Length: 341
Image (tube, helix red, strand yellow):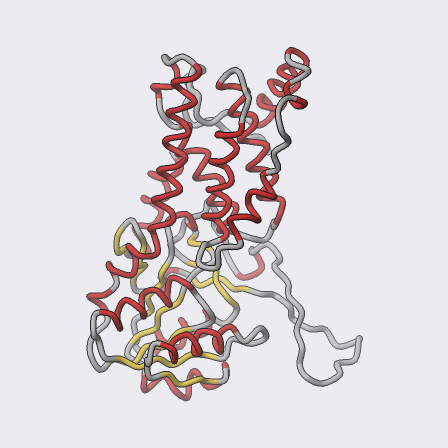
């Protein structure tokens, strides 16, 4: 589908229609047939994988760093050529994992952030390229620091003696709890097991290293244990336009249960996970399947649900901890407009 340019000014260097870019790209290749062969080869996927080797770096941030490297390595001669290169690199990264919401949103936000300045229209190419690179590196730093900003903003909600229920392994949730221990707060954590990949077990091990009192629950014991809980804190694969979240399978049922028992549900999510999506129900989500091992043989004629994530509507969420601030779900759509325009 053709992407509509929200700015009708034909001189704007920000967002352009995808079919127009394809035509411009073809014309550029005809005009400069040696561009692709000049200089050392550069692979955005190789650069992306290099950044991904850093264990604490989110996948979307690795993509943002890789796109900044595209600008540094580019031998484009005009802003149009540079933008075409970036569009191609962004599309390549998004195709690396078509099910990743944060990867797609991170790439889209990068493109809008680095090209969204009217100064590019009046500058010579080298100055404009330097400005774009500066914005790219700044966006990378903002995205990298997001987790720590969220951890600081969330501390007012964690009080001494509280019990926190978490689900799966979220690096931003871990950072929140780690910061709370550094602030000498006393709390305990209930970790769901997080089947089928047992990500909750991984989080429980990390918390044990911090000497945080932690109890591991089988996933089906959430209702049984909810009386002990003061709050739920979960991460997110993506935050959608409605203010709801897409996250690891089981988040929705935990939020439903917590809501019915008047327990607050907090979502911790970096702004690069804000996506232009509006799911109406669970079946609206793009498939993200994973293998399921029940530990026993399952006959082939038995259908197995292999979906990896679910959608939690905004009415079951209390607050979102983001690097843009602590937001109510109803404010998310306004923030998305600001990010994507």
